[in-house]
Image (tube, rainbow, N blue to C red):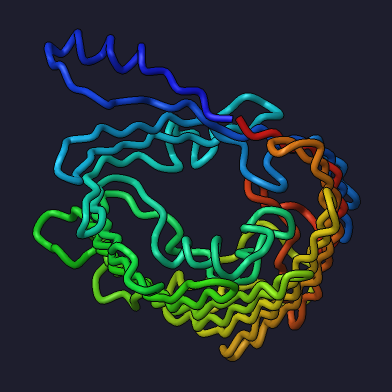
Amino acid sequence: MNIRIPALTALALTLSGTALADSNVTLYGVMDLGVSQDRGGIAGTATRITSGMATQSRWGLRGNEDLGGGLSAFFVIEGGIHADTGSSTQNNTLFGRNTAVGLRGNLGAISAGLQDTPLFTTLNTIVDPLRNGIARSNNLMASTGFRANNSVLYRSPEWNGFSGDAMYAAGEVAGDNAAGRALGGSFGYSNGPLSVRLAYHHRNNDTAVLKNQDAARNTLLGANYDFGPAKVYFGYGVDKGLNSASLNNTAASFGGATPAASTDSRDLLLGVSAPFGVSTVVATYIRKDDRTAMNQDAQQYALAYLYALSKRTDLYTSYALIRNHNGAAYTEGNSEEPGTGNKQFTVGLRHRF
C-alpha cells in the first residue's frame, strides 16, 4: 500500500516559494526476510538469516506534478536495504537502486539519473517469472548492464501494443567521451496474453588509464504468453566481450579449473508460473553455454511456491540447483547476496508497503 504524503510536498513547495497544484509524494517499499540454507560449497553448509530472497528489500520516494497540457514532472529515489543487518545495498549507497527526475507527456517520457537499463527491464518484466529474485536469473544470464549511472532514458508511448526505449549513459572520462560510455535500448509488443521484446546493451570498458578494451555487448530476446491456467516464459541471450557475463561470486570454487567470467556465451531461460487460488507455483530452467576455450557451462533448475496472505504479504519457499561444468563456479544466490553453494533451500516472508 502506497502512502501519499502531500503535506510533505506542500511544505517543500512553501519553503521553495513555489505554489504548484496536483503534486504528491509517495513512500513505498518492500521488506523481505527469510532463512536460506546453502549447500555444496567447499566450506560446507551455510544457514543464514538473509534479506531480499524473493525481492530485494528497499524503500523509496516517488512523486509527480501535473504541469498541464498533458505534461507532468516526476522523480524517484530508491535505496536497497539489507533488512537482516540494516545496512545499505549497492556498495553501501543510500539510494543505489534508482535516482532520477524526468518529464512525461503524450510523446513519451524522458528521465536522467541512475536508472535500470532497457536490458534489465526486459529480463525482469518479460523473461523471468521470479523477477531476478529467488534462484536469481542473473546467476547465469548476463549480469552486467543492469543499471547505469549518469544516464538519460527515453520511453515511448504505446502504439497498438508496440513500444520502445533508448538509453545513453555518459562515461564522464575527461578527454575521452567514449570511455565508460553505455548505450542500450529495447523494442517490443505487448497485447492481451502475449508479450515479446528485444533488448540490447553496449558498454565501453575503456577507462582514463586503460584503452582499446573489448566492449561488453548483451542482446536479449524475451517473450511470455498467458494461457490462463499457466503463463510460460522464454529468454535467449547472447553475451560477447569483456564484462559481458561476470561471475556472480568471484570467490567461489568447486575444484578443478579456475573459474573465469565468460566473454562469449549464450543464455537460455524457460519458465512457467501457475496460480491456484492464493497459491502460485513457479519453475524455471536456465542454461549458460560458454563458447570460450574453457567451456565452463552451467545449468540451473529452480522450483518455488508462493502463498498470498493478502495482496501485499506472501510466504514463499524454494529449492534451486546449479550444475557446474569444467570448473565453472556459479552459486545459488538471491537479489542481495551471491550465496555460497550450488544448492539452496529458502523459506521467507515478503511484505510490500
